[in-house]
Length: 240
Image (tube, rainbow, N blue to C red; front, side, top):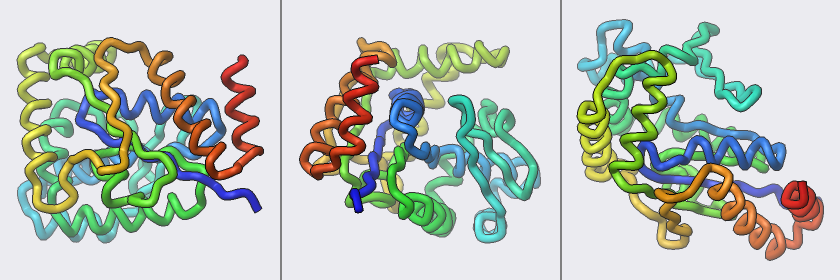
């Protein structure tokens, strides 16, 4: 039986993790796991329920929630308790609070359990802030994506503008810098580069160039694992 592989991509907000992971998953027919969407879903429900500053209530919410992700046509659809919240979890309000929620140890423990279960099925591309260090420390390929704060701010600002959300460049940058401080400084599962991860600054690259680079790295992993079936798939995609 051919070994199935796990690809894990970490990095700060706006570094291009989601785009890279989606593109790889679509190219190779892998499952795409957006761990950030899971934390956003918890944050959205906490905000709507008025409990976002009540840690014990948020923990209870994380333990009780029925959370499902469906990757369809390049979009991760998010459902909580059978309600779709795909658009709602991308709001500026959720952006401002998600790092606070995600640093609660009990919340992380609950979601990591869900993520590991999904990853056990193999042939998965997972992205987040601790997938290479905590969720999938034994991933076949680990990538740490980075980009300058200016580039990350412009990317995130463009996302808001595409959704007709009014927000300034300075507000976006301030939010990203705050998230960087919280994510890197939290005691549980901080954002950091795994020792065996490939660090990749894509500030000057297009998503297509990102994908080309990562496909080559995936091909190397497959060759080392003698996974000829998936290796042939990669070769076919490169020739398209």
